[in-house]
Image (tube, rainbow over all chains, first blue to last red):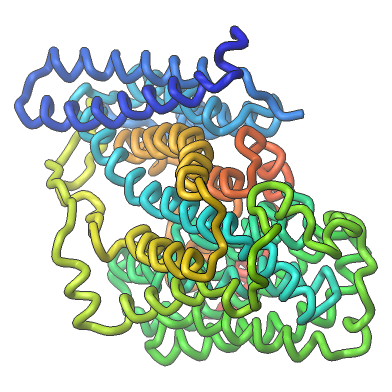
Length: 64
Length: 494
């Protein structure tokens, strides 16, 4: 991972990931209530991608 | 299709937890990285092996987000309160003040990580003890990993009757049994756990040497706390059981500290940074600045936590105030859900988040009042407000990623029958053993460890703490399990 992450961008990217998680969870509820199968499946796929993204941006900092 | 009970399915159900444990303990991943990977495992396993449908997953994740917000409300506000106190130099002062109560590092650790944490678990819970006490211990000079692990282990005896007995009430509701019938065995097993947690806390500090040195104190104080909890629980005062037991423990420790063997200055160097700890220098280095400010008394330094205790007690025990604060709640209704394998989750509302009466809100009130109080005392340098907010956000964001993903996969597991497959059976002693096991399991709870690590400046090192607590968790839970087994099958108790 580039040094840009180590200089503070990590926090912004993690914040973006967690906001995306929360928004997707909210829209998943609305999608499920509306019975929209494709929207729900798309959002679940998106949520999986966001989780992978969150793992990736959090991956640079290992314990000593 | 039905959910088949087999070794393979049991292992698959365990796989998300296994992935997180292996990544955190074995590969030293932080929770913000291991959590999302555990979520992906649960997601894939639930779809391919447990019949999860898109509808089940969608509702489960919405429910998880609300549950996560319930915990995060406390975490964010606890971090904010800690920074408010820390930048005022209060943490440094509390540390040096408590050192005057007892010079013995073991008693200092027991006082904060075992008794005070039980008190805070009683009135707050949901991560409050670990979030608030871990940084205090570091301020006293304890090594950070030991500090977080000690509170994780030390507070776990108080979880069932903690948070105003929320877990105990849940046990009563789920089992359909009378609370008066459940309380005695719960009190007995939790009392034994209390002593075992105290011994584990002593061992955490200095191994066998700590255990021998702390045996008398842990025995006396543990019996006192266990008896207080049992007494209150069996007299229908379960909401106060942990809280009063913790308070009693703090009082008994203050008395025990007068015994000759505990009056000698610190003899351990195990988990404690001996030289720096003597002056409380470690906390002052990390955040607050004390130069050029008026001196601060011990009580003034404690004011943030005294204000918090006062607010929590009033909010929980004074009916009209409780009702006033509970007027606005965030709650969503969820329908009944069924997987392709027929596992059902009944319909019902989500966990309600009381905007103004939630523990997080109470901590926020305490933080705001404390901020203005410390400012009136001239404790902040120019620009402190911005620094406090920046420090809070810096700790909160990675912890939040970890918590949301972990709660997310736990909810997938519970909605697809994976948790059900891992769970066991029930009646009085067994139920008491189960709730005690659940209480003790909180020392391994990733969400709580994330909370502790974030306030202790150990973000990304949650695996180190988990590696310490997991050993004590297995041993203590094993002892409680063996006692329950002996009570049921050898002594034939009912």
